[in-house]
Length: 258
Image 1 (cartoon, rainbow, N blue to C red):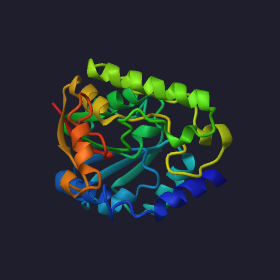
Image 2 (spheres, helix red, strand yellow):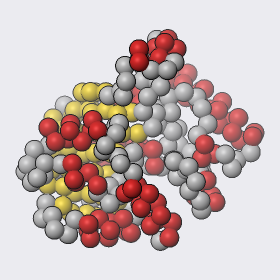
Image 3 (cartoon, rainbow, N blue to C red):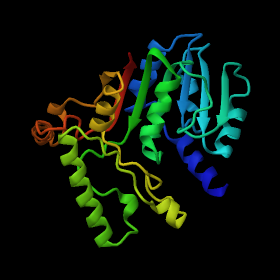
Image 4 (cartoon, rainbow, N blue to C red):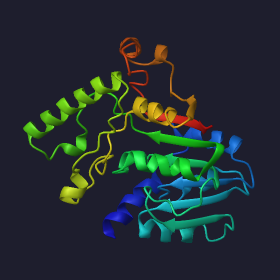
């Protein structure tokens, strides 16, 4: 409970919707999720996004943490359009085609079964509904900081596996690399952002996987054009390589289910 309260208090203090990517996702949801429509947030925390939605949107928040759900219920007790449930992304307790929009805001990287979670999101999403995903993009074959407690040999092996992931990506295979452990799970500490990460998200893999399930990328946001970015020229050159189209930026995307 002590760890959870610290974790969610940190999340609440963060101005997620006053800066990128929250400052593009919030108005996008307001424009496309209208009063009376249903939105599901998978991994809702204490549901700060509700402040950014149009009045009358039917909001459902799912969270694995009982602590977060109880806090959300307290925070939004006066909102008759908000409901919350404790559950997991791999088995959503909702009917097929029951939501107009599903939101995953910095949660996909925390799922141990990301493919299953995406399929579940598509199951509960209506045809022509939107799936909005924000996640860190581990497109390059790198080693996440959460593995710093592992041996050098282990981290080098992980790096080699990430190179294999990239090669397989070129041939159309989506690896969805999941970690065997992370420092929060192993040591019970949370010192850096994403210390509790399980899934090394690749934007290219997610987009490719969803496309194979009849889901089309609608929009992809970047904070700045490449021309205005430090190392923008280098990033532009890397993006010319196969399966590196989204390298250098977090995943901030909207998809439409056909």
